[in-house]
Length: 158
Image (spheres, rainbow, N blue to C red):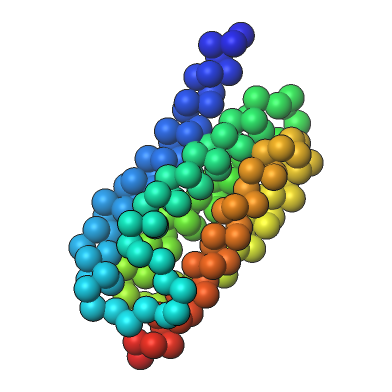
């Protein structure tokens, strides 16, 4: 039983990290353009901060999802898993809009949808496993900060 728990945690952490890594890989050229060419708003952290923060956030997301997945089967659990996967897909698409397509207004719209989905996910997680929900607080805070940065880039680079 303990091995199944470890495998579940590893699966969800690695799956979530892989989604983030694929997004980063697909947008690497756009990220270089952003670093070199874009006017950034005040409080923009150095570029090295982003992969570190996202790796931590993806790990926390995966841990939370593993906790939910390991809980007793229920309609609430199923709902939480579905919302998790939906928000992860939207998370993935934001990078494409922002870095590759350079549609900063569109990316901001995606980010605001993502924020709503993260809040929805937290509420769904809370019904199943409160610690899993609390693990998502840094994620919602960071994405809120990302919305500020995205809006700033959109305004400053018109």
